[in-house]
Length: 453
Image (cartoon, rainbow, N blue to C red; front, side):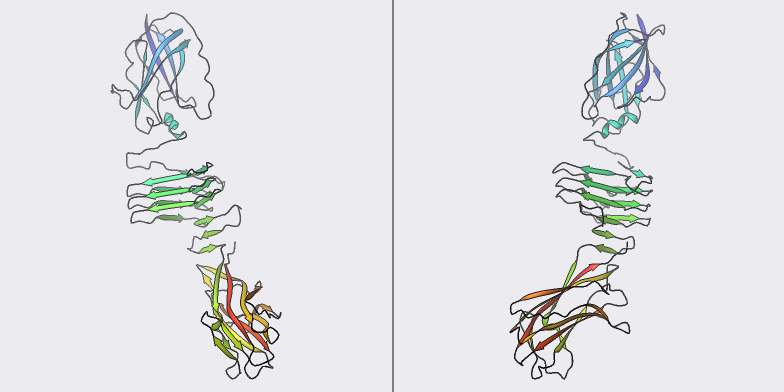
């Protein structure tokens, strides 16, 4: 019997979507009237690596066929190629002309973005012509685990855009929960950017989370282009990277001449924010104005020998030590407490943010705590205003005869500005004789970067 199969054009990945324009092809087929049902395939954990095919088969008079028929399905890289990239043969059941099959021998590397053509033959007859072009929908199979996206032209190999209003709707989200895998890896051997991301909404342009021990984001550039370029026009962070494991949260390597990391934010949010295990506050931030802020503290040390005495005519004597400390005695007039001063110069603004003084620590020891000791400690801020501001003070006696320290928390008037940032430390020393001394080892200031949210 002369049969006339009609290929309906349904050729999809995971969901049944039609290709535009069915095609009618002539084919010689026997007809035995058998009808059979194929068993359902068992479910698997990942998306099946097969391509469903549905067709419509008729005889020469256009009547739908019934029964079982052997079909061979193939994918080619051209309409005239004689060498299929992949091929699958099986017996299909035909009911009222319709049949369902699947092409399951194609690797992900076959569906790599190039134009492919689908061919089908029934029984021992010749393959139907012309072959059916494979349109973009089937290429979604290449987004299974282990996907490789390749671009041989001048366009982007991968471009992700998000216009969603939800701050958690990232343009690209990468998460790795394996102990030593990489959540995101990009390598570039050309002159263009290795990875370029643009977000026109309010969510992050790049958001990555990692629970493993390797880098959350690792970008490598072997040419002269930018290793990573991220652009954001929204109000959220341009790049948001979370690492829940022990590996590097962000790793970028560049062997070219352009910037290793280029970040651009056209909105009101910061350029970069970094967090620890908690959602807030952020531990590190780069503002859109170029400012840099960090939750990490800075410590500044001042040697004990950097003091000046209160008045040039008093009897205070001292001995400078090789370790930077100073042994300070009252001299002949010991009935009146001696005051020594430490002028302190600090940056009042650090990378665009006011400096916050958090604590003051004094390192000292006394020759004899009953005859010479520290009786008062006072840290002042000035002198750019009419009255001096007290930042912290301590009226306790400190009489240890071995090296020790004491710390004064600073919580008032402790924010430096571009108009006020000169500090003065005043130590009151009490003596009962002329020879006892107090040895000041040094002063330590704990500093933070203030940030108004």
